[in-house]
Length: 83
Image (cartoon, rainbow, N blue to C red):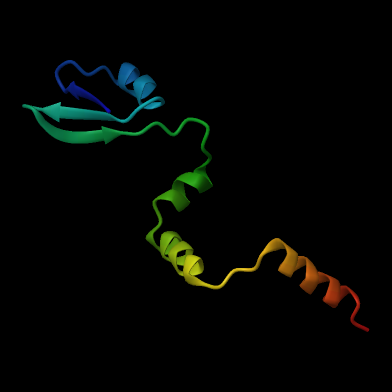
């Protein structure tokens, strides 16, 4: 994580640096902003990444029982052979 004082901060440099590491902007030695690079991400990724509802759904799903690949394939085969 890079720390830059507001007085020395250049927006262009901070944005470029943020693509590699988080950049904290400080005023009088105290953090006031965090810049995180998102180059290569699309709008949907950005929206989901900051969505509490999405992360609650993910957490809930992770508590549910899962199937192995072979169990899934067996179930698919059974469905394929139904009349």
